[in-house]
Image (cartoon, rainbow, N blue to C red):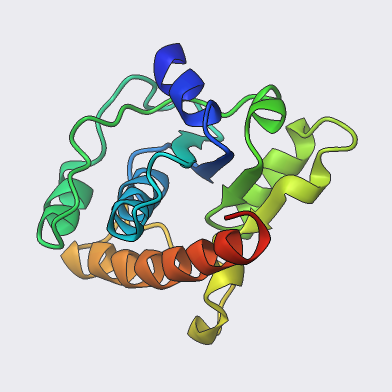
Length: 168
């Protein structure tokens, strides 16, 4: 686990996606954003990881439904494993991106002073959805995972454009 974090933060820019359990939304965002970076030829410059605000699923693979939905869009989530976000992540990562306001609040509670500027809501990079929150698909059906993927793909494109403008 530490090796994956070290690899992500060794890049020019590092991004951490965060949801509640780190088995649905944030690993989906990690996988989709990695794909966007690879397609842009930027995977060697931008590090990516994901985490959860709660310790429900530490060490577990992403939800099988999330994996299936992502695989249909040629995104492999199977190597990813859940971990819990920690205060040190604010030192390690340049961007700490929450999937919804509830997780943003949890991250604000552990954010060290002076690091608040790193926090953002993911959908701030894709405002056309008319909501700030990527909904949690855990208790729903397959359509919820597809909706999350639509949102994550749009926000990933917006985030990539922001990184290009500011850093790359």
